[in-house]
Image 1 (cartoon, rainbow, N blue to C red):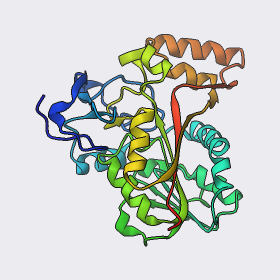
Image 2 (image 1 turned 30 degrees about the vertical axis):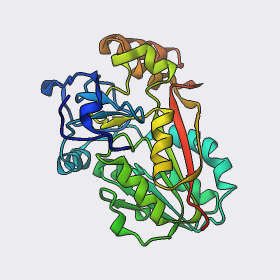
Image 3 (image 1 turned 120 degrees about the vertical axis):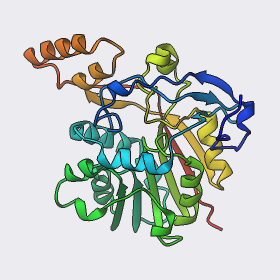
Length: 302
């Protein structure tokens, strides 16, 4: 198989990759929400191939970086409540990591959305909070007191000084970037010795995603790559992180959101959600392990 991109984790030649899913993109179904977070699933994707070395699934002919940047810049946003729920799950999962950090002076979140997780970090004692977010709509949805923490941009390492952060977070964002190796390498240089990177990604090998197959919500036009425990671990190890840990965790969302994710007809889902609203059940919060991973790595203390 000939294509234009080698594996963005281990650099194995693209010719060695095997087809995972054929391209499935219908321009007539594209909307302002196609590059928005926690949207109604569209089940569209670029052609995806699987690396035989590190197990990464990736788009072998992804859009140019400028195209992705513009798509996220103009994307819509309507998931503030889901963002808050996600941040609560991340807080619970990441809290043991915070106890191991040498300090809590500064934290960076790449793909911060409304900055809700930065608020959580502030409550944990971090003094300097920085978020990078390309979506104007997400930033506009943030409360006024969070907006000074957020930079509207695509992450660039050159915007920050080396050795300046105790914690760098990247939650449900690494699948969306063209070069995850670049993000991990930059984080290793921007962290202080002993600092930690915390990543949340989908696990395409999880039971629920294997069961749903191409009808899983992770099959998405936004995703330039999909990770497994092996591939995300290799990404961190190859970029010099130590004490790498990869584990699953549970997300907690309202029943109406879980319903939106199911691979069922849109009209049927809307009718069910309407019925749940009628019985005051749509906002009931439920926790499930839906195949998401928390990956942690530490910069060596020298």
